[in-house]
Length: 64
Image 1 (tube, one colour):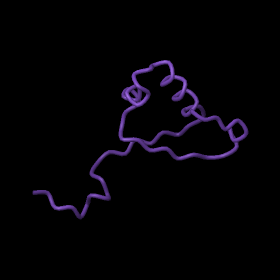
Image 2: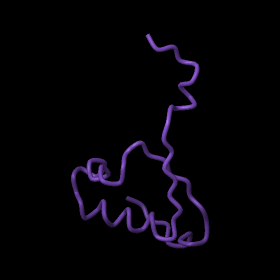
Image 3: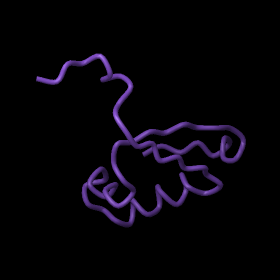
């Protein structure tokens, strides 16, 4: 884990994931305490955007 103490509330970050917040514990080896702490810090003053639909990158891929 890393810490960037001087950038807190002084910059922007864009983070994307294909997992719902409920599933993030699997990313942190099932540790719900760490997951909660990470999400708490990421979501403080955050704007979340849920994007649904087909992937733009996969638009030219032919389904067989």
